[in-house]
Amino acid sequence: MKAMLLVLAVAGSFAAGAVHAQSGADVVKAKGCLGCHDVAVKKVGPAYKDIAAKYKSDKGAQATLSAKLKEGKGHPVKFAGSDAELKAALEYVLSSK
Image (cartoon, rainbow, N blue to C red; front, side, top):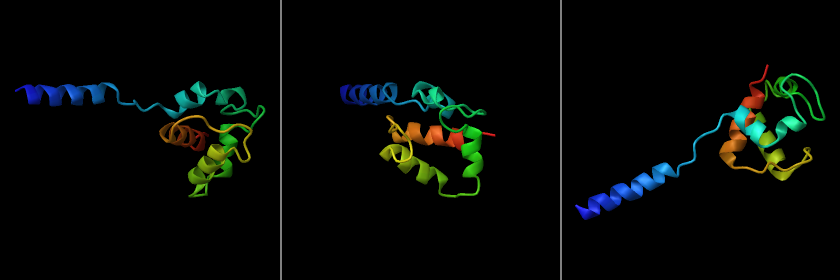
């Protein structure tokens, strides 16, 4: 019985500490991306709709942009976040219209 309670307690602690997926919109807001980018209007950086249009037919767009943001190539700031956050942000950006 004690072993079962221990297993349940450990499982519950992992579930409580699990990272909840954020939406791409939440990620770009939290990471400060909106300081230089906007969905529809060019600011310091291009508008998300323009980025989405540029990469519309590129099947490897997410991988390309992910590598650039992680390395800081072609972007003034390296993305400071998890791979899941980066993926959510890029899905949001690439789906902008």
